[in-house]
Structure formats: C-alpha cells, structure tokens
Image (cartoon, rainbow, N blue to C red; front, side, top):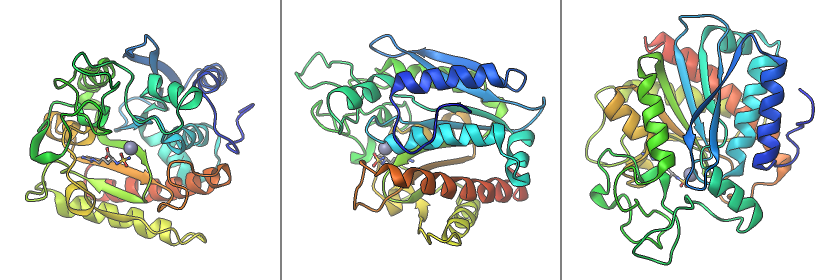
Length: 309
Ligand code: 0X9
Ligand code: ZN
C-alpha cells in the first residue's frame, strides 16, 4: 500500500493522503465516512471496511488523546492488514466483520501535538471561563458525566470534563454518528496509550460492575494470553477501568456501553509500561501492531464463542 512503512510516525496530512490512497486502491470493499467537524474546522474521517452485507460490526476509535501517536499508527496498520494480508485469520476478521475505524479522532489536538506541543492531550476549544485551552474528550460524554471524581471541573486540568456534557463538537459528532449505526455495532474499541491495559466498563465507578462482567473478563483474558504467548512476552492487565486503573467518568466506552447498549467495549492501552510512555520509539510501532492483531484475533473469536458476534 504505497508509502507507509510504519517505521516512523505520520502527521495528519500524511494519514489523510494515505487513507485516500486506500479508498482508491480498494473501492469495492471500503467506504469513506465523515462524522463531522472539529472545533478548528477539520473533518473527522473514518473508513468502513465491508466485504459482504449483514456482517456484525466492530467500531474502533483511535487517537482521542492527541499525544498517543501509537494509536493512529496501529489503527492505520490494522486497516492495511485487513485489506492486504493473506493470513487466513486476518482474512476471517476482514471478511466476516464490518469495520468502522477512525484513525485520528482528535484531529485538532493531534495536529497541535505534532506542530507545537508533543505532550498535548485534549481538544483545542477554548473555555470561556479560563485562559487554559481544551477539554479531555474522553471525559466529555454524557454518561455519569463528572461523577465520583472521575474527571475535573478545572479547565487547566488534563482531565477537564468540559463545561457541559458534549460541549466538544468532536464528542457530539462521534456520539451522533455511533448512535446512527448502533444496531450494526457489536463491539466498540477505544485505542489509547500507554500502560498495556485492556479496560472494560465501568470507568465511572469501582463499586458496580456490568451484568456481563464475567464475559468481559473472559474475553479480556483471551486477549492477554494471546499477546503474552508472542516472543515479546508483553503483558497486558485486564479488568474494569475503575477497578484496575482509576475512576474515569464520561468516557466513550462507558457511554456506548450504557447509552447504546453495545455490550462488548474496551479501552486498549498500548505499549509501553512507562519507560518511554507517550513517546514510544518508532521501532516499537510494528511490534505493537503485531500484538494488537494477535490480541484482536483472540478477542473476536472469544466474543463470537460467547454469542456477542
Ligand atoms: O484516562 C483515560 O482517559 C484513559 N487513559 S489515558 O492514559 N490514555 O488517558 C483510560 C480511560 C478508560 N476509561 C474507560 N474505559 N471508562
Ligand atoms: Zn488516552
């Protein structure tokens, strides 16, 4: 697929050009979609991959946090594999499921992280009551918004929930788009870094668990075990967000789980455990991608076995 080698990180412009090339090369199985515009007016784009009608759907939202560059690197590689790999297990994933993938969701923040501040996380919309800029889009969704200390009301905080739920045009656009196709979505995944965690609902409380939490753990364990068996022996920890990580309210995964009833949802925190953190060296892009694919095969097969697909 032309120019991408996944040996360095690409900017938004490169990724959009690459996407256009993908649509041109695979017109019969890909479809471009747009969910809306960012605060600064950029179009938030996605790709639907569908080899046949009636497939169960898997949605991937990536790079909601601007500095988590490994997420869009991995999402673009994953798209490429679905379209070009001859591995039978990848062909199974590609041809028997419909994929909706947004490689760069927080487009304004991503651009800012490349051009001005490598460690930028939030959106770029100003807040009327403060000189600080941006909201944590992964705290801005209207499900248990601002509950249990799982977000901040301080506009200067990295986990600022926004002045109101869905104050961010990006969050509103994603919510409206996913709502419009909710009957087609069986699994919702949100790509993040770092920490090597596979996190299921709930994020907003550690005192309650979803009624299908056992299934979510079973699927999570299959993901973890598959990755651990690779030569890198990378370890992922799985469990509910609030119980293994911290309370995080108003996240995408919780919102989709609670409001749209999509009962398999995970936040995946990619490499590493903190040595390089958000600034993961480019030589680790491909190993991370391999791990994701291995974990994804297991996650999909276990979800199917348990009746979610
Ligand atoms: O805090 C976050 O938003 C995520 N971690 S990160 O270091 N990438 O910022 C974790 C969010 C997990 N939340 C839910 N699944 N509820
Ligand atoms: Zn993140």
